[in-house]
Length: 108
Image (tube, one colour):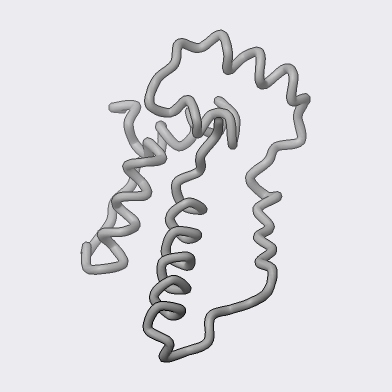
């Protein structure tokens, strides 16, 4: 199973807000379909080729992320060097998501 932390975080916040809306009765909850398009994350490569490459890697913390975006993009995230100024409410959430994505973990 694959999991992509930013989408999970956004959907969790949305669902939590809708639950509170329906429990309190102050506002009307949304009663329609939600279509979320994240096609930009998927590379134009052969799925079988990428899946076989991922299976050969020993399972680690980022295995579910590899299933979603591929090993090459996970390695690219690991090589990034991030400098973030300020860590308020939004910055704290961004730092959490960067850590879950493994940004800058290669140690270079």
